[in-house]
Image (cartoon, rainbow, N blue to C red; front, side, top):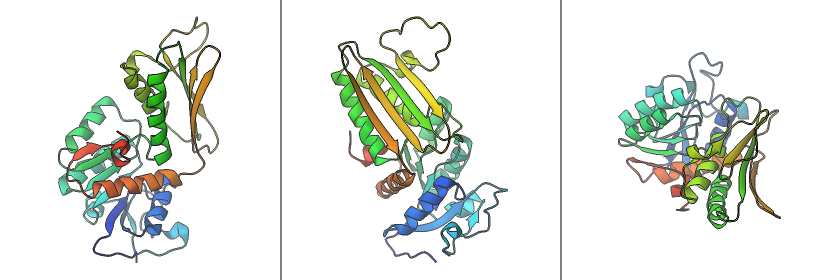
Length: 274
């Protein structure tokens, strides 16, 4: 069984059979202040009924299950890196039970984000397109650079690369980078973003923010923002070599929520970067 104490934070993991789920489970088991309380996966998953830490050769006594309500009843917080529809279904139950949620899922529509905000009135939620501490520090650096380089004709391009299994593009992190830059310059990303270039595009339009997407192999996640000026260019990059950074950031987020009862937050709140 997992070690626990009266002060242990009871953590449930969604998508427990997946790569990110495995990384999160390993991080929880290695922590000194969190307890693996439940492990969720979708009906039909071959992992159902197995010990959540079987991939590590360990026995925790926590079996992977598909009943959301039963799983969440055992937890203080759920960490969810699944798909938008699944995350929203989990959040609806979590809000009803008063279970907090750390959301690392990306690809939400504006309507789905609005739905998250409604549930956050009943329970505490952290929504961030990237849980990595390093990535969020990068967001802060981009904010500073965007303000300093707003004048001088610097063209902004965002290049991101991920593994071949990723289903949304551009990545949520790349989009967040664009939003941070646009907001720092007093604008909206929707008014400046260019997501596709093909054929005779003409000259680059001033003040646009371009996106380029790469998908292939097992790339965990690379992001580079290029500020290209006359006679110089500034590049701010973050590269992930494993998902461990996302897992550790998620646990920091879960600990942050321990003192909250409701409201929507992000990693800037967790890391005091505002």
